Image (tube, rainbow, N blue to C red; front, side):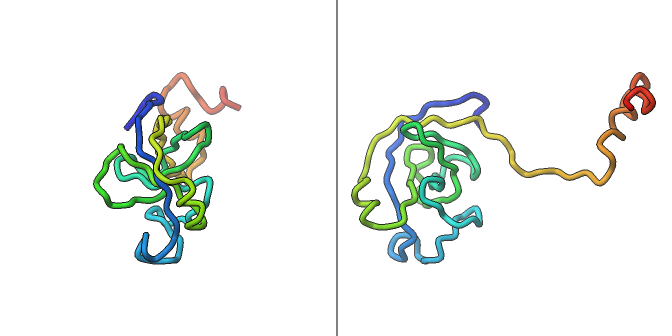
Length: 128
C-alpha cells in the first residue's frame, strides 16, 4: 500500500476488550492474535500487520473497529477503561511504515537449486 513512510493526521482513541466496546471479552483481534497493550491498534483503512508510529512508539495494526473511517481514525488498545478514558480522544500525526507482506513462503527444495538452474553461468561447482 505505502512504499515509503507516510504521515497521516489521525484521530486516536483508546479501546479495551470490554463487551460493551467489542461485543466480546476474549481479547482476540481481527488478525487472530491476542490484543496487547503497547502493540495492538485498530484501523479499518490500513492492512493488518502494518506498522504505525504514534508519538515515537511503534504499534501494529492487528484489529478492526468497523466504523468505516478509513485511515482517519486509529484505536489504541488499553487493558483498562480507566487508561482508555485517561487517553481520551487526541489528534496525532501518525507515521505509516512501508507495508511488508509477512507471510513466509517455505520451499522444500534446497535454496541453491534455483540459483544454478536459472542461468548457465551459475553452476553448482562454482557456488560451493
